[in-house]
Image (cartoon, rainbow, N blue to C red; front, side):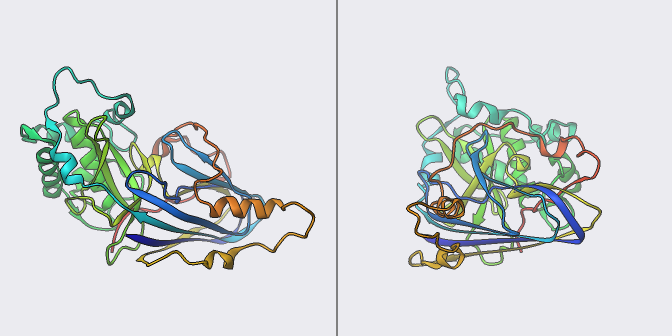
Amino acid sequence: MLLRIHHETKLSYSNPVSETVFELRMAPPSNDDQTSMGYHLKISPQAPVTSYRDGFGNRVDLFNITSPYRELVTQATSYVRTHRRSGLDRLSGVSWPASPGNSVAIEAFEYLQPSPLVERSPALTAFVSTLEVPSGTLLDVVYVLLNAVAARLQYEKRVTSTRTPVSEALELGRGVCQDFAHLFLAACRGIHLPARYVSGYVNHPGEIATHAWCQVWGNPQVGWIDVDPTHSCVVENDHVVTAVGRDYSDVPPNRGLWKGRSQETMGVSVTVDPVEQATLEWNEWSPPRPRATGGFSQSHLQSQSQRQGMVGVAPRRAARSAYPNQRSPRAGLHQQQGEQQQQQ
């Protein structure tokens, strides 16, 4: 399935703000389950963009805006072809519990540990103690955990935020996609099953923002398998991954700081449409052609690098900041509000 994804975020301010540092995680990677056919990022006001890999391998687009402005608009457009391997077959081919002699692979070990939004708590300990995990296959275990999450959380918007820890959502008994994903992660880690958070998009009617789900670790041969706790299902070809991490705090679609005395409001628009082929609409956003000097201007090179998706992104390991537990910004700086992952 070929999908066209358009994600627009508009940040408006009551008074001019400046000295903005902003990062985006909206570029779908290419892997065994999907292929990025193109990615284009447009920013207004215009600013140079630096792309790098964070500590989890996700592409991050970073930019600064020093001059005053009252509106910031980012538009990310992608074409992605999904060809996901059967999650049902892969899960049913893994025995549970794992053999005593099998140690956890190094790439999965970190996802057994508590994380900023999925910390240990008495409420979580009590929740995990009620799980009746069967012996059999990993598919059997996943369905038990999905049913347990569905029994404890009711989908409801505007009762949690991007910074809500799973213990609070569990106490409320309500939440959105990221809360369902966090509780599923807590259940997996509670039974010693590595699991990680996924940020991305889904081709479902009614989606108005980015979606969140999880991946569980099978074994080195099977790898990571996508599971959607909100819909209580194993993921198929309608989900597109953009970033993975320990929880939402590692993979927000957008995050930033700004300076000024102002009130911030945010509007988000996301469309995901099946298409027959990628178009040449990227040319709408192309910068003016450089003069014939035998070379290319910096802005032209930057635009070309962004349009080519994963090409030209310098691999670099970055520090993993605990987003909800960060120290308050220094005087005069404000954290940009995050996009909560939810559906209509």
